[in-house]
Amino acid sequence: MKRRLTGFAALLAVLYMGACFYMWSTQMQQVFEPTMEWQTTPARMGMNYEALRIPVGSGADKGELDAWWVPSELPDAPTLVYFHGNYRNIGNNLAHTRHLHQLGYNVLLADYRGFGKSSGGKPSEAKVFEDAEAVWQYAIGQRGRRPAQTVIYGHSLGGAIAIDLAVHHPEAAGLITEGTFTSMQAMGQINYGFLPIGLLLNQRFTSIEKVPALKIPVLFIHGTWDKKVPVEMAKQLYAAAGEPKSLLLIEGGEHNNSGTIGWVEYRDAVTAFVRKNTH
Image (tube, rainbow, N blue to C red; front, side):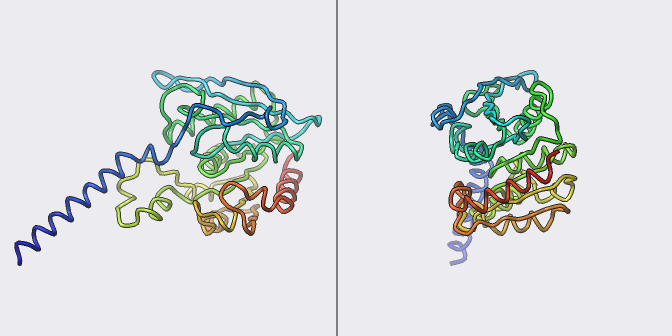
């Protein structure tokens, strides 16, 4: 009996180590899920746009970010620099861009390296932060947008990227995140709580540790029916951030459709935030 128990324990240990190795070795594919082909374009959704290529990186990681500039028809309109989530590319879920454009804003959105038609190798946490910086510099430098008229916006994983960028740019007008998480470790523990996630992760996205350092106004938006990122994470980010801050919970909103499900609340909150903080 003792020998059987020892053998069973050894088998469990092998299976557990195998699960740990699988988690460690596949985390890049689980964090980043890019595709090359666009599902749609702004033009197909009734928006005029300009296709851009934004240089980024150096050495073996040097590349160009594929980007779209969707201009407002209003003169001197505020600009929203938009960062999408981990799935597909900028052609996926353009409903966010259409909502923001309908509110009268310029929208600049770009793919990270490894996504869509961007070049420069595979994505990583360090590289997407560098990509976001390149997009910001393009908006302010080549595009001539004033920081005081420019809001950083991120959805899901893009929210973590937007938070990191906003911490480094206190001159920005404000930050809006939608459906974003506290950290990749917290996300991993939802599905892999039996594994030592903190030891295995090398893509950490520790937003909960960064939001206290924000020096600009922030609006957190989250759908109460979000099954991918629990709404409690928005509450935790809100609690950790300093003032000025606001939290919009959209009843019935899921991970990708809060602005559609609760259009009136979404419209009013975003409009009020941008109007108050841009000048």
